[in-house]
Image (tube, rainbow, N blue to C red; front, side):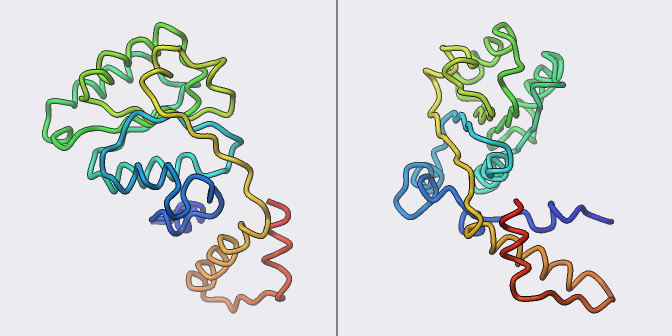
Length: 191
């Protein structure tokens, strides 16, 4: 199977994530929540490419919960109902995390349909948006969620991820792969 490079280098633990030290560093709020094992409903907002999806995956994995992913630009209420139907099955036994990317594209009625399942604890919502959630997310969802802002990642913090990608490529190709010492920093700067 030819897995995309982005998936091969995706961080598998909180310690592998670059950036977001204000949330994920030692004794920081989001890290404390994740390590507690008691995952509340969460809303992540910030620019694309800052780790929102990766953090949601790690949370579900560490909590031992089934992860479902929907995108607000393409998902319908029917997609959500299909996930709800799995709550009482073997897959939903340990709980379910619904990662709803681009929640701002869900209308008010679609967002309201999540409330019942959030309130009764059968579903943990982790939503993400590139927009300010205080303007685009239904107030009742906001009041039942913890909101965290993800920030752009500086180039010096991206450099380890670039090195990880280069090393991964080096092990996956039969060709000799070499780079000049300044290349990782230049690639990180371009990111």
